[in-house]
Amino acid sequence: MSDSPPASPAPAPPPADASRERIIAAATSLFAEHGYDGTSTRRIAADAGLNMATVAYHVGGKPDLYREVMLRAHLAEQRVLTDALAAFREVAPTDPVAAVTALVDRYLDFCLDQPHIPALWMRRWLSDAAEFADLEAAYARPLIESVTDTVREAVPDGPAAGSAARADVEMTVWTVLWSTHGFCRSGIRAEVPRFRAHLRALVLRDLGLDAPRPREGEHG
Image 1: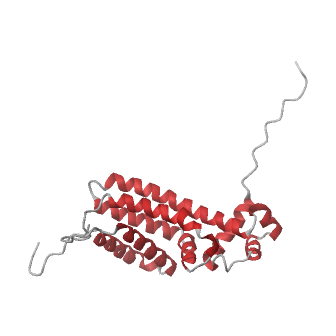
Image 2: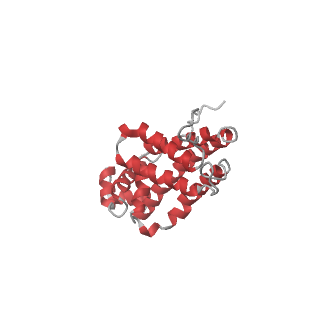
Image 3: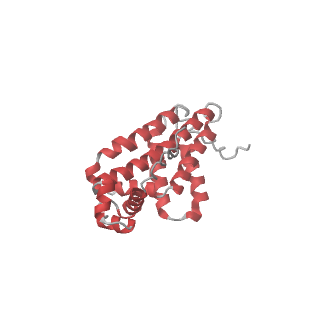
């Protein structure tokens, strides 16, 4: 037998790049609060507790960092909506009202839990980071179309009882997005139950899924 010592175990893989994650976290917060145009690389480095050379080494320039931040925001939203739409498809055939309500609730809860994501998109609506015009087509539009197509299959032909016009599902989906993003940026968390009830009622009414109100003099 050989007297040589046993081989050393293979070294553990290196930990995740903590510096890179600190940079991305700092940039996400700053881009959400001040926008891309209002945030300097120097400020990102300062908030991350690193020098500018380290920031450049880990993430490249500010444009590269912004694209990474927006990609992560998109992927988080995509994961939530993929799960929410799968649940919607299970419930919608038998109870479209419950399916729509759950979908609205899921999106509102996501935005409340991840307020930087509505903030990032609202900054873009104010013409921030105009040089990244491709992000809407790459990220926002596919999600809007996915939700619109899925919901459209579950709604009736009219937006309300007695109406011959088809519900404009895409506009309803955009309305949820605009309203929810604006509410989450308002900071009035005490009004969440009231806003949730309002948003549910608005969407159900717009899609023709609300119960018709009895006419004056009718009972039931």
